Image (cartoon, rainbow, N blue to C red):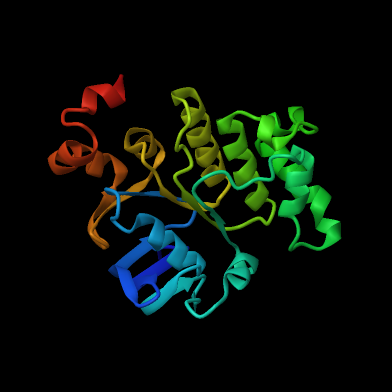
Length: 246
């Protein structure tokens, strides 16, 4: 028998105030998998992440996490149950050190858990140990993104929501962030990623979901979606197979 999905959405409709943005989204994420959401601006990708985390308005449908429909839970309760969200843009405390930022990530945890949880993310991201006393604002963009991911990983989530983790980064820094996501999934965390670098994201993903105008347009293995002529034309610049495999 196959494992229960880490997250299962059924006919989810959500948005802001009285305006639904995403409509009838059904999706199942396998435990330990990486799923990337792709689509144009306004497709509803970020709205979907926020709906899962509970920071916008739910209209209808189910959000089932670990067998429980969580649509009525506050974001703080979803965090306690193991859902972590890294929103788009810088979300660290730039004047504070890496150490202080990681300690702030532990604010929901019992004090006895702070040191072992921080040690665990330092073993996952050794770069942070070398920058331990540095102000977060002095890190490179890629290093700051890794720090922000680490700040939520100290809670030991089983589901990680990432909104545009490589936005504004150099190609080298983008590669480091994608490698970090791959390492996280290898440790059993399920990741749902919104990403503007479709090339890089599909290379590290198990599954891709294409959204258009607030609805799911396509879903399948990342390699299959990548090779679909419609997706190559719309999101990957035509004949991109040689570029990706170079």
